[in-house]
Image (cartoon, rainbow, N blue to C red; front, side, top):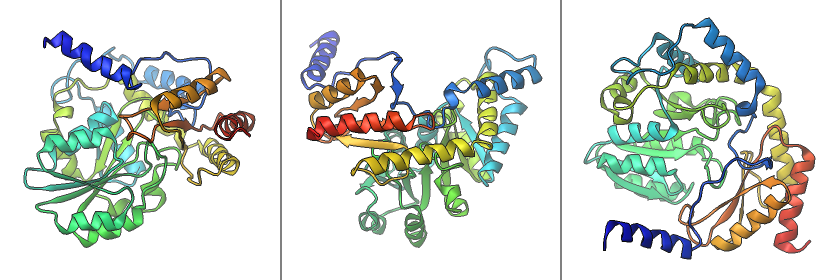
Length: 369
């Protein structure tokens, strides 16, 4: 079989299984799909703040010109890292070009052969990919199940790391962080928390909200969700930052973020510091959705409706889109076969009427009433 024949065969298999992926351009539909929880990505105020920040720091280059270990580092980037770390009550931080890069860099470089990494079975693909590259022993535990985690902790060898998300990206439920910390401390394991879908929804993240920052080994904060821009930071000790500068390949061997991206991150944090009305509105919308459905009690902005079957789930998403609401289908193999679902994201800018329209359509198509 030639390479081209192999590619065609794999694509045909996806098409036959109903899981063939295609890019879809942004639509004019009402947004129940994006991770722009507070509306920062569409914010004219954020855009104006960024323009003003760039004018204050002229002249700036169009690009960063290289990796941060060569020509791409700036005092602005280092000051931004310190500012973000301070706002999260952390000692230090290191910027990465994306959340994927941050997880890949941290988890591929820190655990070593002979160490153990235990992750929640629903952890993001970037977490799993990073662990695989580390050559450490990798185990998963049943989602949010402390007994399952403890069974794995009892057999861990070498340095042990436990990796979870504070808010899970496909189900929208929260990790039991306080109980996880108690358990990992008991077994002398380092807890790593990905806060991608918590920042903004729970102000500076769930770890800060629960006042647990002193008991978490490292956090990954991403800026492409509620902050409305792009990039990520790994927060932890100063010695962890120095280690990542020396060993995290996704940091070392990549061109640094340009000034515009750094300025947008800085201004995103400034906007977040005054965003309590938007956060309150988002939480109000979440509570409204929960009250209109029997399927969710979580206070996260991510809601799911499990349909089952790739084609059935795509058909349901198409029906909702035809009504003017942008909801997307999540298909296997992204989620296990049989758990294909609609993934709904709520935002501060969704109106009560839009949320009621969405829940009414779902109820009618699922139950006929």
